[in-house]
Amino acid sequence: MNIGNLMHKTQNGLSLAEINNTVPIPKNAGFWKKLLAYSGPGALVAVGYMDPGNWVTSIAGGAQFGYLLMSVILISSLIAMLLQAMSAKLGIVTGMDLAQATRLKAGKKWGFVLWIITELAIMATDIAEVIGSAVALNLLFNLPLLIGVFVTVLDVFLLLILARYGFRKIEAIVITLIATILVVFLYEVIISQPNIAQMFGGLIPKPEIVTNGGALFIALGIVGATVMPHNLYLHSSIVQARQYNRKERDSLKEAVKFATIDSNIQLSIAFVINCLLLILGAALFFGYSGSLDTLGQLYRALNDNSIVGAIASPVLSVLFAVALLASGQNSTITGTLTGQIIMEGFIHMRMPMWARRMITRVLAIIPVVLCILVFGSTESVVEHLLIYTQVFLSIALPFSIIPLTIFTSDKQMMGEFKNRLWVNILAWITTVILTGLNIWLIISTFQ
Image (cartoon, rainbow, N blue to C red; front, side):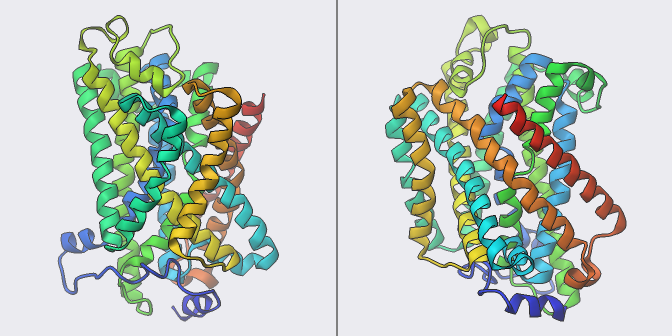
């Protein structure tokens, strides 16, 4: 793989140099030991598929249409697995992350333009995390939203402390938080006693998804917001933390295999969590005519006997808020890491880790603070800002997914690891569909 190594040398250093090639892989170990060693990056990627911005949509989908849209979540998860596997393969085979590879092909001028676009997308992702965490703190401790927004700045220092103890510690924290979210919603779904037959039947696509205008609207929203552009940059970088042999074909092949397995396992967990959110909406709120447009309304509904019946309790509401806070903390870690990746990859700018983290967070809280000061500190005002963050994500997606598909299909870049024909066809179909859906989401948002 000399081509990949030559290309790597043209870049401004290693991707995420402080963690690159730092996690040891056991020699002559069995399958499970090697999988454990490679596991971790997939968890950081899966975070983007269960962030606070998706919660209301999934629960509202269940409340309005029962289990109908579970098949949409399944299709979205399969698309995510395909693209994230391509992203991991690009990083392992070429020794570059997606930002570095794009800068190499696009040049300095376009690299700067793409950095601005992607930076806005990361800001949008971070805004969703700030809002989710601030709302969770408000629900749990009655902390005013404005103060909660400023408290989220402390997340930066938490990440800096974790980084001093190695990348595996960060991965462990993320996995723990994902497990917390999974356990909370699994418990809430079990006591909500969903209809098992309808639940599994919902995994089969039905024509009502297309013929029902309201269902189609939510379905398109779920699919269109499936792939977060920052995840593609993140995954192509953090898979390089493992100490596989960069010059040996078999070692690269093994790294690609285990990175893909890790990614698919973690995205399967994200799929389960998203299904649990929709099932919770279907089991508890199907037929409810009231409003469930905000996280706060969902929180209060779980403690309202008139809405969810006898199972309503403060415990359900508190667990919901705890899971929301866990989701927000996870997004902090992935968003700030990606900010560093794209800055170094697109414009070859390096700065101290603490400064990069602080700039990312301050840029994220400014729109939220202005929104609160101008329009008020009600949760509906703040959470509606989440809708507009999706616009930036929608704009940025084609600028990441199209280069990824081109690069992983290029024999000169990937050698024998280039996409197979069927993968190439699926990738381009996915690219066209997601790009179209995101354009539609932008138009419908402003309408």
